[in-house]
Image (cartoon, rainbow, N blue to C red; front, side):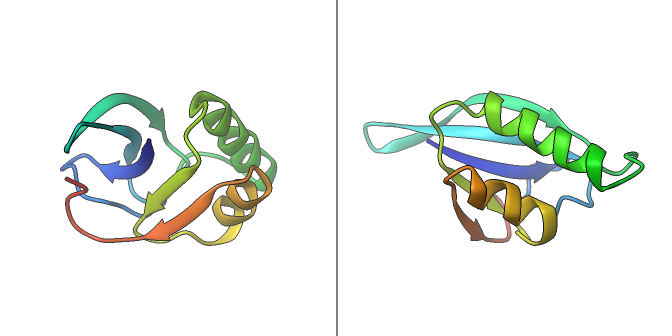
Length: 95
């Protein structure tokens, strides 16, 4: 499974954009969407709230340990690294 942060248009996005975490799984040779996890960090007041939201997202990702976003920096990077994720940066449509 691979988790990708996507914006409202379905493109890989930065966390400062409105979007959701989309979990993909491989079925034979095709990738399909397993689920979407809402994530909105732009209205949070401080680093404590951001970190709490990120930790909640990590729990919802379950066994998935690969995370992709347009940028993987700051709190996102540290929370994911501490949780054992491999992180990657990419642009465009995840499919």
